[in-house]
Length: 393
Image 1 (cartoon, helix red, strand yellow):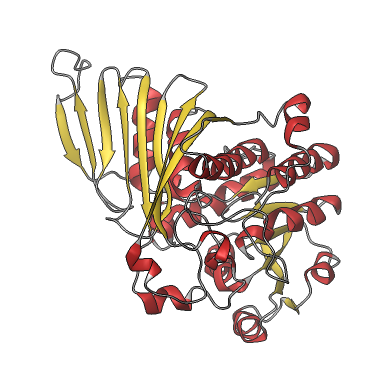
Image 2 (spheres, helix red, strand yellow):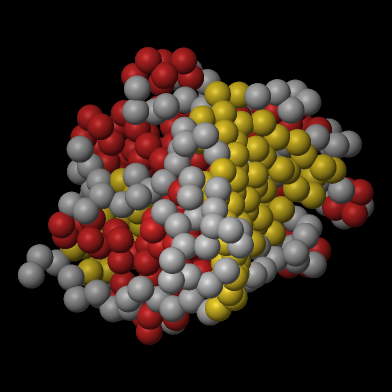
């Protein structure tokens, strides 16, 4: 059996994968990397055979087969490119890229090198969302006309500050559309559809503004609308700062299904009373079961999704089974968040999403490097909020 040598970069989040990887006989945690030595040492105690690094480039020289990118949100693309150029497979957290230009660079590096790349979006792999994909795949709902998703990460001021360690940390500058994978990802996975165009609006919060600290993104949430290549309408948030827990809904021509307001919630399935498929009830609410590996999924984070992302990645390494969230879908999700933010700044203007599979589409945004995230001197090229503190001033 081939052993796959894996490195993990970023151990605040990356440590969540240690116990999952240890459950795969052919996964070897060979290297760990973090710029914060306390996190590095703590993870090193759990993996005594792993070599420890504070420099990412040095870790890439350790003979790795794959790398888990769990570093800062807006730094994934550059790190993925460096790994793929060395023939190292990439498991990338959160978003694929923070700019359209980096989306292009990421896609073209994957094509040129042939290196494996997967965006590790986990929410689609909760039991409820996997069940809704099963339902949609049967065709019994009919053509999906509408889908919606909300991801709400609400917490007290003190917890929010702990998640934002420093005035240039990405969470202090994150527009409400950019962290879009936890909502758009499930909608794409259940329906199999790709976003084609987007518009959006953001809502400012006086409560968040009153915190008056070094964070600059004082919008409470943004609502995005996408038309898909299947003719459906998707409506979804990014990472909302206020609201109820996360939830998802899919509406077809024959009926609809939706979750409760938790990742581990029930599924509510309803058919129009004149279009009930043979052998089905007109409506029912039930707790979905796992299709497989339930015990392992139940022990993992994000409603079991963390297990399934690793499982899918290991299948990719072993057998070449391409994951749903490949480099093209990853780039498309990032582009939706990026262009939705511009829509927020332009009173809901509609933007077309580049089809990153096509070179002529990539050429249109190849040099588009506008970003709300600051460089080491605090300079940005886009504002990160629609309210009083636009562009941090």
